[in-house]
Length: 219
Ligand SMILES: Nc1ncnc2c1ncn2[C@@H]1O[C@H](COP(=O)(O)OP(=O)(O)OP(=O)(O)O)[C@@H](O)[C@H]1O
Image (cartoon, rainbow, N blue to C red):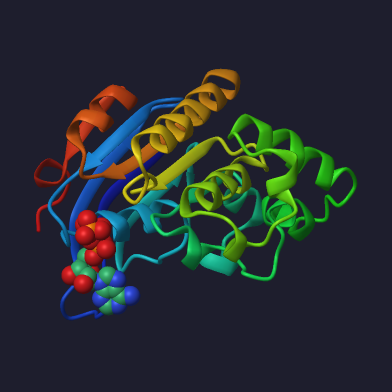
């Protein structure tokens, strides 16, 4: 379903942070990516999520070679991938009520009709109640905001979910709730998962297999 082949990427052409990284996710497979801090896991995950253009290598999604990243990527590919980051406050527009935050991708892709209702339904699956949905990010906890960010990532029904340290800042019960929400979404839709993290035990429980950075990349 998604294949990263010999990806080189970074922030300065002379010194890429990811060198020759290859990773393959079969359709519906959940793969954990483990590695030391700063090795380049997030950068590779952002390449897979079409958010960071690599300097070399190939990304293929469902057999289709990707030729453009970020806003240049075709919408049908962008909407096939949902992304959740480590820090919800950096990923959420502070002006939006949670219900509108969750519905944002629906509105951005012209699906306004029923957007609030769909957002509220999805919010329930991540454990957000009605009253919280009317609050803005500064009026909720990090865990509650991350729940909203997960719901937003799922609202377009992606075939692949990329979770970059999604639970690193959260307590055990919120972590369990978010992992359970991802698992039930995957069970219902057959979606794949790329989960970047440090916690070997959590990734082992959550994923079909775990890839070690040293086996994925050459540098
Ligand atoms: N926007 C950026 N501009 C310049 N350098 C960056 C940028 N983002 C990350 N880096 C650098 O790229 C390297 C890899 O970062 P990356 O976030 O991909 O690693 P990581 O394995 O996900 O780390 P962690 O586990 O600590 O989140 C690091 O040395 C980091 O300092």
